[in-house]
Structures are given as structure tokens and as C-alpha cells.
Amino acid sequence: MTHADFNHLLSSIEALSPQQMKRLRQRLDTRLAQPASHVEDQAQKAPGRTAARGPKRARAADQPVKKPMNRDEFHRHLIEIGLMSQLPDTAADFDDPDDEPVPIKGEPLSETVIRERR
Image (cartoon, rainbow, N blue to C red; front, side):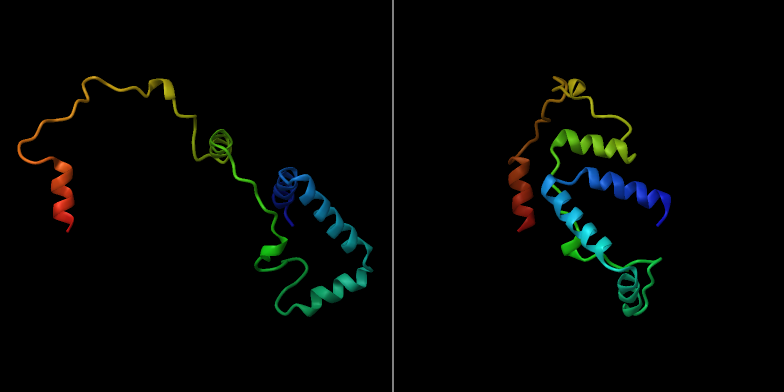
């Protein structure tokens, strides 16, 4: 496991709920209580996989359940991973009086669109 992978694992552990941390600790304690030869035997039984490479795909049961983020947490996450450079400025979002609807002749545009889609 690379240093970056290990750091990612540590940061993921910090996001776990107390119940999930207890489950993780139980699994780690069980795994550490097994003799080293038993762990190596399991790695050899899996065809095409080595202990260094690990499993090709994580099983759904082993993945922690993530709680949904609220809007502020989501924005902070986007900034942390580099998809946003700053938060949107809601104070600058105002209704401009110059943005008035353009009058058109004939039936309302919405009715035209609905009729044309049929």
C-alpha cells in the first residue's frame, strides 16, 4: 500500500460513525488474532490475487455507509478536492431590473413549446 493510499485510508476512518468504527475494530482484532500463516494461506487461495495487490474490487459489505452531506459540507468537499476554487457569492445573485421578459406577439411561448413537442 502506498503512503498516499494509507493517508487516504486514515482520513476515511475519521469520517466513520462510532458504530462503524466499532465494526472496523472488531474486524481488525479478529484479523490480528489469526496466526500469520492462516492469513498467508487465504491470500494464496484467491486465484490471480496477491497480498501486495489486494482484491480487484471491494465487496459492498466491507464498504462503510456514508452519511449524506449537507450543502455546506458538499461545497467544502468540492473545494478540498479542487473542483471549485471558491464558494459561490450569493450576495451577488440578485434580480436585475433590466432582465424583464421580452414581449412576443401571438400565443405564450410555453404553449408553443408544448404544442410543438407533441
